[in-house]
Length: 53
Image (tube, rainbow, N blue to C red; front, side):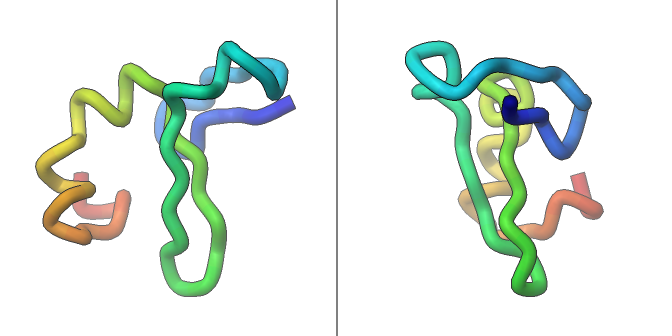
């Protein structure tokens, strides 16, 4: 089961998580749900760590 590292939403791996995004921050893999990914898209494109969102 995956969980969003920003809001905590959980989902089973599979079709439900196809729209989720992943990032590596300071060597740690982070996973973000579709809602958080859409809300923070500009920060992600700017390569800002999630702590800045």
